[in-house]
Image (cartoon, rainbow, N blue to C red; front, side, top):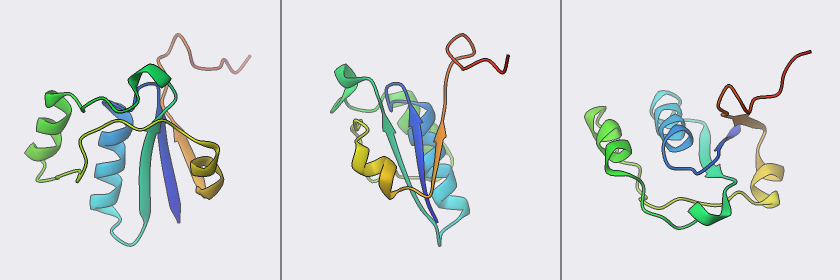
Length: 91
């Protein structure tokens, strides 16, 4: 299974989810990305990297990535993170 984690900037939530998922499910493939174009190619914040290192996880990368149609089509599951004030309502 191929899982894509998606959040706004690909700086905190999605890279942490990707790394933890990959650590827990070694046989599965995970990737993370963001949809905010201005954040593409930025270095991950030190607190994100440190949080992962505290769990003995090295992401193997240190820059944000912008989501592409190809990434979404290649994924079996897409898990998106949103702030409560931007999440779709159920009503």
